Length: 77
Image 1 (cartoon, rainbow, N blue to C red):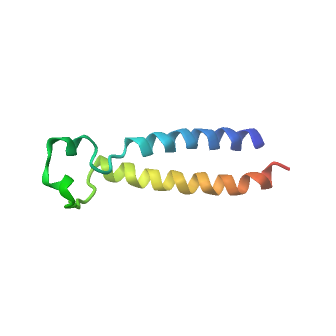
Image 2 (tube, rainbow, N blue to C red):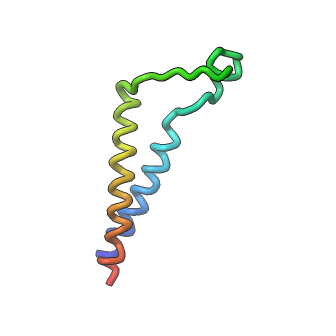
């Protein structure tokens, strides 16, 4: 039972890391062209399509990761 939780935890950790790295946030390469947004103005946009699904799946994986991490000591006995 302990090995199953360990493998699930490691798998979720890798998927969570990958999904966090896939999300785009901040200026990045877009500010290199000298756009007005790099001068301090912020542009807010809503998440749509794949970006929205990626965001929600990242949140769900983070919650599952935290719950398993908290329950792991109970099952390790």
